[in-house]
Image (cartoon, rainbow, N blue to C red; front, side, top):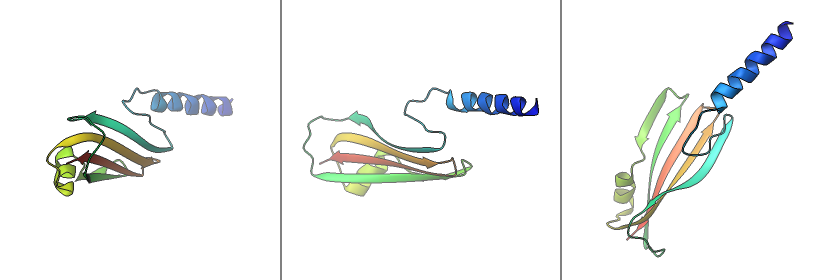
Length: 104
């Protein structure tokens, strides 16, 4: 009977952890996605790329500047064509979040 209770507890925990709606796909064990953020003046041609990054450790400490403004400064971009977002998270232990700005 204890095994049935343990299985029920594990399943209920999985439902609560994995059942949350998120704006991007999220894996409870591992996540590695690339997603669009938005477009500026449009067009597909660009001459510069800038990135900015933030990291998270154990979901307790997060540092860095993954803002569009920081990515623009890092790429010396004045006009934004479009912005992408990358996320990598391993078991909630280590997370890496990168914003990439394309523009001129």
